[in-house]
Length: 97
Image 1: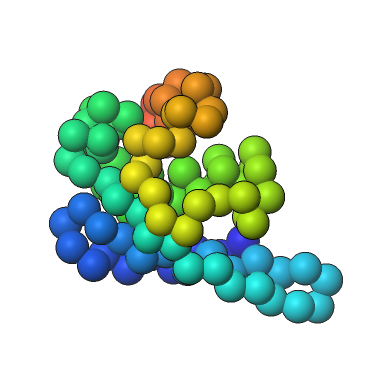
Image 2: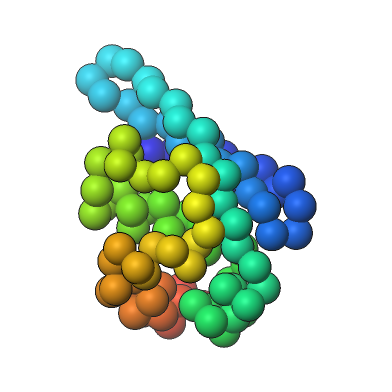
């Protein structure tokens, strides 16, 4: 899995997810919103928004098929579907900062 993250504004990011299956690459484009409040709530602002997005996509890909990930979403919605997401973020931040 390869991610390309493009900041379109302070809170809006374009994400290109490239996956390889056997000898074929597949790309999907997403729009993700991460507010300063989201960043603080999830990480206490100990990492930047791009790193949080990277972690979030790795988490999502580990928990569901890429085809199930919504094309446009706010990062705070992940915990609605995966209540363990905030604690997974906290553990990741604690281990990597």
